[in-house]
Amino acid sequence: MNQMEWVKVSWIPMGIWHRNMQSNQRRPIFFHHIFNQFFHAIPAKSTKLFITFGYDRYEGSIICQLNSCYQFINMATSQSLTSKCVFYLLLVFTCHSNADQWTYDNQTIDWSGYTWRIKDGYRSPGPNYFTNDSISVTNDTLTLTSKPLSEGKWSSAEIYTVSSLGHGTYQWIIESEIATLPPQICLGLFTWEDNAPEVFNREVDIEISKFGEANLTTNAQFTIQPHEVPGNIFRFDIKPSPGRSQAEFTWSPCGVTFRLTKESDEKQYFNHTDTRYHMAHGNENVHINLWLFDGQPPTPSEPVTIDISSFTFRTLDETNPEYIVPCITQNSMLPNVTAISV
Image 1 (cartoon, rainbow, N blue to C red):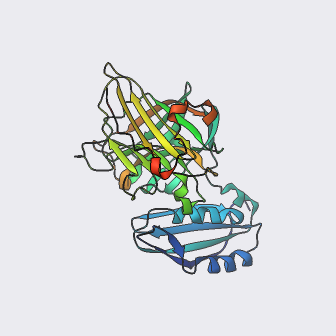
Image 2: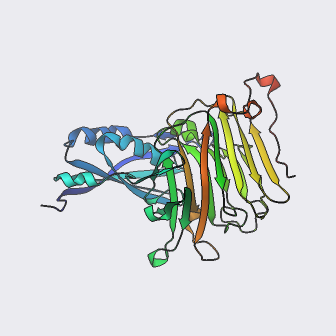
Image 3: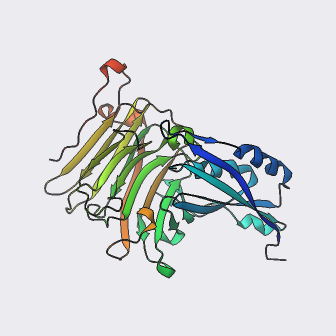
């Protein structure tokens, strides 16, 4: 038989997670106990799990093999929660070897010296419909596209490196105009580790977006997670002008420095230093995405395309020392630097 044979399908409540609003810590109430019971009771080789989950305004689904399910559960629970949520697993028992066709982000591209996986499926952020054909590479230029799909839906685009790079300088050269994106569109350049919710996924962001608020007077931000902490978001406004943009951050053991330069007759330059983010590197990956805030279509309702000509990573040894936050005592901590435009 060439088709997958469905032996058993069942909904199973897997646990309630509660978020402490002050500490921002998420704690499982009975999740792992139940998951372990089912995990050890399932035949290992011919079985896959189809995981669906939902909370607040987010829901999604992923498929994984048994030995990697914990990673995706942690990914699901690392999203921004506002109160309590109930998770479910839909167990799908399969009998035939073609179940191995069900993989997680199995399409890759080679670009700018790295191998990248293409995000695929109805998933966070947004949620959005991430599609393989929203990503392309032409003449060494990466193109991310948000475009209309059927039934009023829109696509989003995301890639992430297979490898983890660690402390150093992350730099992107953006050829497209980024100052006039529709308010629903977000261009994200960031690090993220799926399996590290206890350290907020080691997420450091450069985000170009008004996050759905058309009347905002700023259109970009440098962000350290958790973003709810005062001072972890630094907003600024990029003016439209001809010329490419260079966005970069340097992540070191004792902080992060951000920089964005917009080339034009009157160059725009923005920078910011965060001295509080003391984070060891782990298994984080580099991500680039173009997505729709709350999954809402852009206004005007036209496809949005971003071209990025290169991504470059430099180790701390290769980085200009002035961009590296020195490790100093709390009493002499450097103040955060403001943005300037020249």
